[in-house]
Image (cartoon, rainbow, N blue to C red):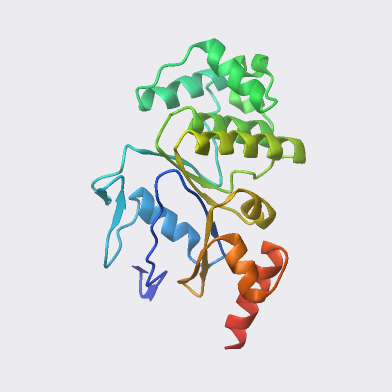
Amino acid sequence: MSYGAGFVISDVNLQVRAGEFVGLIGVNGAGKTSLIKTILGLRDADAGKVCVMGKVVSQNHVSPSLAFLPERFEPSWFLTGLEFLRFSSGLYKVKWSDADYELYALRLALDPAALRRRVQTYSKGMRQKLGVLAAVMTKAPLLVLDEPMSGLDPVARTLVKDLLLEVKGQGRTIFVSSHILADMDELCDKVALLHNKKLQFLGTPADLKAQTGDDSLERAFLHFIEVRRAA
């Protein structure tokens, strides 16, 4: 995949099966955002193709089967939290009662009363929780989440992880980009490691740790890219 005069990423062969939790990891500039944009249909690949639920994705056809949470999530500030959740669910023709939204908010320790307030009054952590809820409550078969733990404290991170594992248990697929490798180690069935604009590793966190001889995914990742730099 190229942008302007240079290649952004190349030689990416990645298959994510239904019901899998897959993590995308790599240093800044590795091409993670470009890959996500291609999956979303915001950027076309120069060669090959991207398929979601068996259908080719392009700038002319964005899959209705996925829901996306961007890294810099900024919901419309003039809406209340509840209005935003209704709007997001409505895009996928999913109907929930207000009581349902409030129950899900409680799952992430978000005060249901806050859903009646405008988003402009929310803290960064509250907005992030709202974004996670909006993505989950679309019922989309595929969730693409870019840094979903951004701005969350340790308690909220644990609650989000529990909710995402529950979503996975429903047979839905989760594709997450994150720099928090401890979370990726805990949650992911597979990790895809991008480095030097290429997919360098695809396998379980345990496989990567075994390959480098490290006991944590963070150490294994550092060891892996150091070896590639020295090569």
